[in-house]
Image (spheres, rainbow, N blue to C red):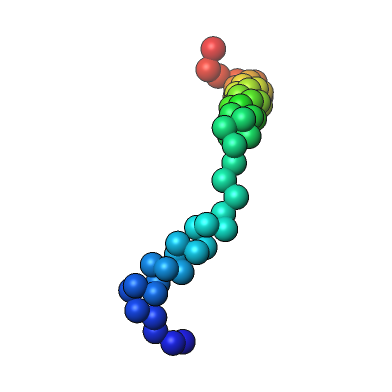
Length: 65
């Protein structure tokens, strides 16, 4: 690999950064909302799964209440 000078490297970084298509504020807000919804769904799922497993183990082993 050929070595590049720091100045040339910074020029290349600037050129690549200019090619990036940044999301709009609306796209960012929608994506953020989707993340929160899916996190909530995952939290409910794991809460229910944990509750069922705890109830099953307590019932099988016969102690805990």
